[in-house]
Amino acid sequence: MTTPSPLLQVRDLHVAVGERTVLRGVSCDVQPGSLAVLMGANGSGKSTLGMALAGHPRYRVTGGQALLAGQDLLALPAHERARAGLFVSFQSPPDIPGVKNNLFIRTALNAVREARGEAPLDAFDFLTSAKSAAKDLGLPAAMLGRPVNEGFSGGERKRNELLQLTLLQPRLALLDEIDSGMDVDGVRTVVEQVARLRAAGMAFIVISHYLQMIEQLAPSAVLRLDQGRIAEAGDLALAQRIARTGFAAASATPTTQGA
Ligand SMILES: Nc1ncnc2c1ncn2[C@@H]1O[C@H](COP(=O)(O)OP(=O)(O)OP(=O)(O)O)[C@@H](O)[C@H]1O
Ligand SMILES: [Mg+2]
Image (cartoon, rainbow, N blue to C red; front, side, top):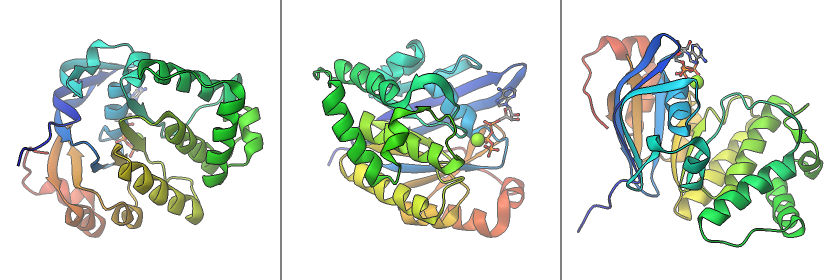
């Protein structure tokens, strides 16, 4: 039996934000179709990892490598990373005043469809599938016609991130605290939708502090970020231990570099 090559390979990644080095040698692999949960104390650099992989200009990569399906992600501008199959959701999704949600998502979708060699969707076909996906995700269809996230509640913004994920069909999605601000039905929707997309072959990195959801996601790996590195890698038992004893206790114990 041969092991599949990793979909994402991160090696010794160093990232600085302003004057501060936040990531100091992150290494991890994500296999196709797998789901890794990323945990770590507030401020440990979880969102920084997502933003750096996505290509946010404020998060400066100062060393290391990140390959998506063997392609050098860090050499690509942000939009080409998305076209290569990476999706990174925002922990706090911003408003984009003046840009209609449906046009925003359709433009992004047609850009990734072009990269996959697929024909663009016209406004009618797009709206048909977007309305149906919005309904499944508990987002009123009227929100497609409003400016992106403008006047959306916290939970609605997170559902709108899920809608983009569902329509864009990336190879790898990093979801940054997608459950925060969501009600119980929203969290159930996240779990069900992630399971559906994963069954179709999508891989995930899910950042969360919420054990009950982490358990329902049935992760293939749980990673703990501390001091700018993956300090521990394990399975669900690691998340359960962190929930029981906290990050302070975890970072006081001897750590193993891994993933
Ligand atoms: N744009 C920024 N400007 C200045 N400092 C930043 C910026 N973004 C992140 N940082 C700093 O980098 C560190 C890591 O932040 P990051 O948001 O990655 O943490 P996190 O692990 O996602 O935390 P949380 O669990 O609270 O979301 C923090 O000390 C934060 O203050
Ligand atoms: Mg964060």
